[in-house]
Amino acid sequence: MDHNRRQFLKATSLTAVSGILLPKSMTAIAGVSKKIRILVWDERSDTEKEAYDHFLGNYIADQLKGHPEFSVSSAGLDDAEQGLSESTLDHTDLLIWWGHIRQGEISPEKGKNIVERIKAGSLSLIALHSAHWSTPFVQAMNEITRRNVLKDQSVKEGDISFIPPPKQFTVPQYDSRVTPYIVERKFPDGQTKLQVHLPFCCFPAYRNDGKPSTVKVLRPEHPIMKGLPASFQLTQTEMYDEPFHVPPPDQVLFEESWAGGEWFRSGMLWNLGKGKVFYFRPGHETFPVYKDPKVMQILSNAAKWMIS
Image (cartoon, rainbow, N blue to C red; front, side, top):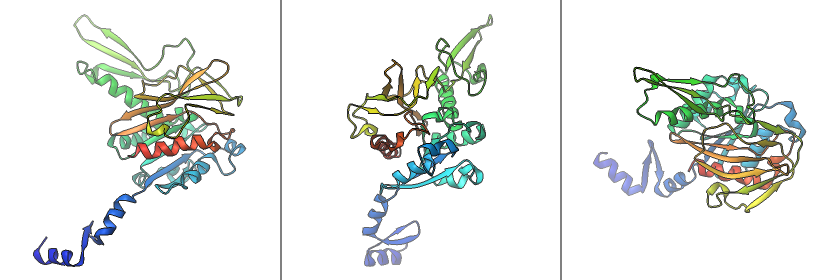
C-alpha cells in the first residue's frame, strides 16, 4: 500500500475489506454477523403431508429461519439439478437431508461430491431418520470405513477390496455379522489381502406403529445437548432397533428406547476430514416429531456447533 493510500485510510478511519472500503466499526460487525448457510433437502414425497402441510423439509426450514444466526433455504428432489447444483452447494455450510422412498434417485457420484466437500471442511451433513440410506450418508459411511482401514499403514490400498452389501437397500438380520468388517487373507508368499465389507447403513428391525420412545442424553456437556433434560419422551415415532450397521461413531450423544425393549443409538457423530456428519434418528414423515420443541432445539444446536 503506498503512502498516500495509507494516509487516506488513517484520515478517514476506513478499513479495506476485499477491495471495499468500510468504516472500522462496521468490519467487526460484518465479521460477527456472518450467518450459517443451511440447506434443508427433502425428497418431498406425498406421504409427508400427513403430518406436514407443505412437506417436512419446508417445515424444518421455516423453524430454523427463526434463528438470526442462520440463513436457511430448502430444496427438493424435483427441483432443477435435484436441488443440489454446484452453485447451491458452494453457498451451503450445512446440509440437512431427509430421504425415504426415493433414495436411489441420487447418484453415487453426487454423494461422493458431497463427501469431498465434507472432507474439505466446506460442508457438514445432518442425516435425518430414514436418510440412513441416503446417498450422501452411505457414501460418507463408506469413506469413513475406507479411512479407518487405511490407518494401518502396513496394508497397501491395492491389496484391499471394498465389498458393498449384497443388494442395495437390504435389511440385515439380527444374527448377521455387523458391518463394516474385515476378512484378512494371508498367502504363502507372505502377502496379505483384505476384504472390507462395507456397512449396510441399516438395522434388523423397525416398527411404524407410532408408539412413544424415551430419549436418554448420554453427553449432557456436549453443545448439541444444550438445554435438554436428562431424558425426555417422544409421544409418536417409528421404532428402529440395534445393531445399526455403520462405522463406530466418534461420539454417541443420546440413546432412544421403547417399551418393547428395543433401543437405538439415535444421536451419532463422526468426524470426516475437516467436516462433520451427524445422524439424527428421531422423526417420521407421518408423525409430527419435528414439531416437538426439544427436537428442533437439537437441530438448531447442531447447526451452530457443526459450523463453529
